[in-house]
Image (cartoon, rainbow, N blue to C red; front, top):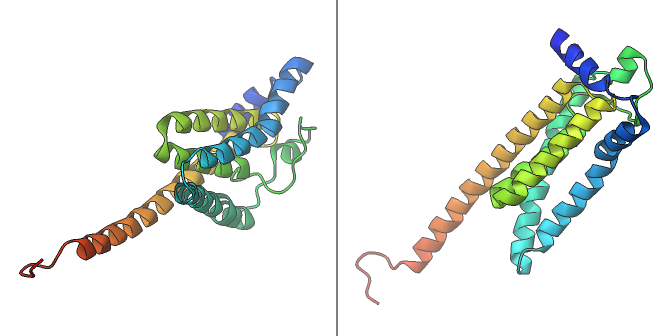
Length: 190
């Protein structure tokens, strides 16, 4: 896709302008991931009670596992797109291996962002915004094309929708079972 290469060249063209801008790009491309992971752990532990913590943990873990571990991993296995610096022959700002599409960082952090957004919108907006900055920085750094990041976002969104639907259906079953246990049957005496 011509527009993908053009957009990549525009973003990546900024790298190398100054040590300061390269440093910012490297921070957002590499180190922001650790901050987001730490924030996700904090988000889990801010919940009151062990059961609430476990529910949030499993919701986030299922979404991330499906997004990064299963769907993105399967796509990358069958569609091994080389990274931009391999195809275009330049030295990126950060070192990366493996394939480029879909972005594993995008699949991971956007999955966290969508799952957190469904639980707390304010935290979700922050998470999704920072995940977006991480994705842009990885384009600037020369390790992803724009479509790699979009692919990671779409994988994360699909994963979140699948997990949310699955959990919603299980909650409906549990809720209806609890209602039957609580409500006496018609015609029975108390």
